[in-house]
Length: 90
Image (tube, rainbow, N blue to C red; front, side, top):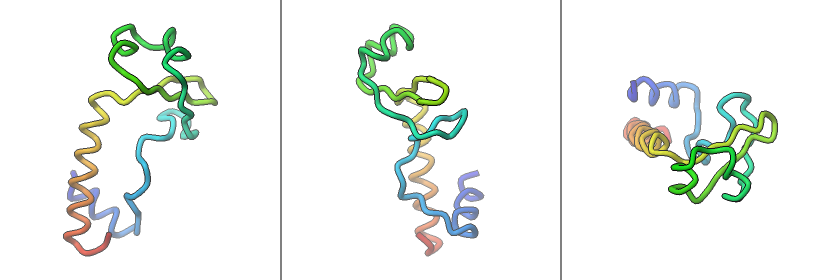
């Protein structure tokens, strides 16, 4: 899958240097950072206790935080970037 994604990046001339995970997964609106206090009643208690930064979609009010799944996605993107560099296009 990562090889295929690297190939798409190369063929379509995409750049991977932008900050990922800054848009709403539902509507693609840019997220805005909110304070933990603002997020408190909108996230599970464990998340509130373990996270320091929260982001909210101004369109649909969905709240996001950087969970472990984001770390895994970052690792995938890093590997894709490395493949693209090896291919000579980044």
